[in-house]
Length: 326
Image (cartoon, rainbow, N blue to C red):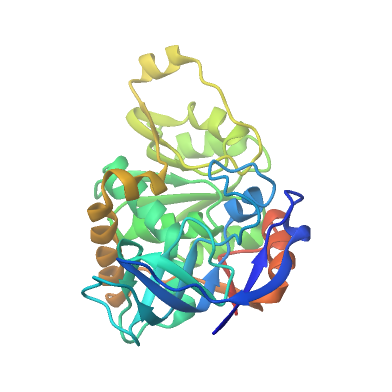
């Protein structure tokens, strides 16, 4: 059995990805071999190709952390899975390939009626947003949630999950088309973040109180202004730094407004609490069955077009999820 991968052989960005073919690996004890049918693309995939992400695999490696496919081989001692099972997978990297070996704690049996594209698109973005809102911020029904980059992968997931959890959702984005998309997926109010007026708009909308929870995958100026429109006892979620600048914070503002700055490195839960990841995945599948969340697959590409797909993603030319087909 042969395996095709899109490999990073030098840390020169997505354009340096190259197609390579070799023998498919065999699963070891506690592992399964998955034939990948769909792989999701994320902003951090652009970073990992440059060596700018916290995960730094040895060269060469395939990017990609979200996938869905079929189990084609099982290792010794595997229980609960068999050849032929349709599964969603959450990898550290390596999903931009026709086959991938994963430990069983990183695969989850998909609902029968769920497509491979939807399962791959749900992946890490929905896990990240669910962990952030449900477990880290403890978002409550009736609270106000502000989501930055609300038309992106994690942003749209946060909008949908926020509504599912009973919050009033405000979204920011960089264009009218993206604001409209955020509204289509559940944001009740939207503002452009191309200028600073959104901060005052959030305060006006909330009667001067501010947002109870702010979901920030952007960093930079978005983070700075968020500290000025967060509610007393609010929770400011640090999800990422897509804006390019890692912000700093005047801690007197945290003290005076009594708000919390809450980080989330979702992948660390595989080490510290993998059972919580499994629980979150089942709860997300349940929300999908209830039609309360629905990943948006905006485009699909052949696996060999991974470089262009990541370039579009890094250039903010995409909305929702971009999915690759091996």
